[in-house]
Amino acid sequence: MAPPATYNILMYSHDTYGLGHLRRTMAIAEHLRQRGVNILILTGSSLAGRYETPDGVDFVRIPGMIKKTNEEYLPLSIKINARHALNIRRNIIVATAKAFQPHLFIVDKAPMGLRREVIPTLKWLRRCMPRTRTILGLRDIMDDAASTSREWAEKGVYDVLDRYYSEIWVYGDKGLYDPVVEYAIPESISRKMVFTGYIPRHVPSPQSMARVRREERLSPEEKLVVVTTGGGGDGYPLMDAYLGMLEAGGAPEHRVIFVSGPFMPKSDREAVARRAGRLRARFYHFYRRMETLLGLADAVVTMGGYNTTCEILSQGKPCLVVPREVPRLEQRIRAEVLSAKGLIEFLPWDALTPRTIGERLSRLLGDPGPYRTAMATFPFTGLSVISQRVAAFREAMCRVDASACPPPDAAPR
Image (cartoon, rainbow, N blue to C red; front, side, top):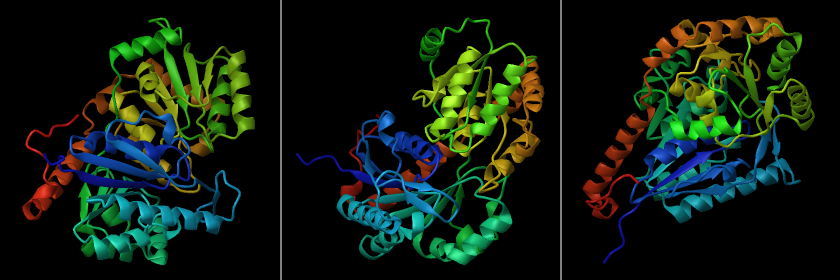
């Protein structure tokens, strides 16, 4: 008997800063996995192994790079020249594509990859596997309009989008923010764009939340605030201000759990841990079951990256967003858009003080109803639209190649 037909999906996540790219890629991969589908994720994240990997999904680790500025990247761990590290990454990406023979190649966020490292793979696929669909997945907002348009023009991104990508998936709502207009995207490219809507995140079960509540020794009547800064590389000022509010007294009565993120500098996270300990607050450097922790929260305080925003909105948690404004304005723009819809409480970075944190927190904990009402109708269509597009790709392939079709009994795992 012949082995079941397979459909190979290769995903690329450059992962130079933070956790959002990998978490978004994993959320999509877990949803797309089904019988007869193989998913391989190329990632530079050193944290890939810390998360549970579902059946049908695996990783190819490329050397990690760390972002110093918008234009400067250095090897994360290995002590070699940056150009040498990039050559290794580029060669691994090409070799993986040649060996894996993907039917679908999904590139996250960076159209050319880090320092143009996926261009050779895109060229090879176009030449040797022309029926492979190549997809660029973009978060809802890249940066402010002027900076994005200028950068894309200078780096030739518009040409790459036009020549090498079958479709461009925008993981956002055109009614909230329209990159076609904001980034002056020409019609030849905009007709490739599919607005999927935001990507929902896993909502934990009551059993898992009850277990964590016991582990954290939270009584049913206690209010919990989770303070998280994503990857944490630039998150110390937010945690410092929150700790200052607690140390000054006068904040609403509540319990606090701080999650610094794995990229917060060691000296900063040690300072947060010491101060949190004196206040009888809990501190974690990294938390594997973040969705469960957020599920327990009465409110969340965060910097508002795309991934964290999706996790919070998926669970309907009142949140205070204090967005970073360098090196990109992406978080600030998203916070302003969502705040205008009454979905979040927004505090500009230059207004961040212990006093302003306390004022906003009092509002969140004292009257969470309006935020929950606004979030209750927020549409999360991202995964369903992506599934529809992949199903259409497979159906088209089946019409010309029966071996690419799934067996009749194929079903999601």
